[in-house]
Amino acid sequence: MNSKAFYLAVGNILLLGANAQAQHLWWNLERQNDATCLYGEITVLATHPGIYYCGANWHPGEAAGGYCGIQDNSLKERRTIFSVWDTSPDLHPTVTAADARTVFNRFGGEGTGAHTHMVWPWKTGETFQFFVQKEPSLKADSTDMRYFVYDRSQKKWLHSATITSPNGGKKSVTTIGGGLHSFLENLTGKNRNVPKIALYRLWLGKSLDTMKCLTRARGDGTWGQLHDAYFLAEGDMAELSAVFSQLEKEYGKPVMGTKGKSLDPISDKPVPATVSADLKRLPRANEVKDN
Image (cartoon, rainbow, N blue to C red; front, side, top):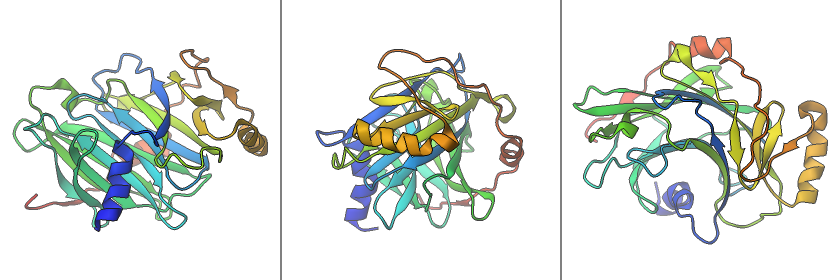
């Protein structure tokens, strides 16, 4: 992987400088602070190159916090990304399993940790589905976090990577939670007036069978509810309104949120039955040796 590609995939996500701009959804965990399983859906309805749609960022700022989602890099390339921060300056995560197409390395910038990405041709209007799970590792005093994505063309789940983190006595290493949020980030700071809209839904639990839909969230920037999900958006309001009008027949009208205030909860839907069945027989990627 050349240095330019690595910088685009990693550095632009992590360096929240003057150019970067993001909108966030802060999820109410509904007392599920010890969760180890998270299933999520992102549906991008309008996009532009240079945007990262983070499906979930768990334990931000804590030991082994991490994130996953999809990125619109250019007119020719899109990706899915999964990364985990260090447990401590001396305790680093490593990629211990990966699909043959997954690229992985260390990252730096705003913190340090283990990064993975895979070229993934997600499409506007189609729902991107992902699943992350933490389990005790075969490595002593460590935790495995596995990242899976659903391949719509093959109609099957794919194990993108496992990142193994030393526990270091930190509870955040073994759970998914903390200030759990999703976000939409303009990595370049350009074309901010161009409409971008994405829908988000998350399910969280201590096991596959106990995952519950997160129905309440607060946001900043341009956010709200649409099609019984939460949305984040960026763009000129007049242009966004025009896009929302075009989407109204299929998705309904948006309910706009304001910073610091809550909207009524969205519907408490269970994990789709077909997804729940699939998650109980997930594949495993090949072990990464000498890492």
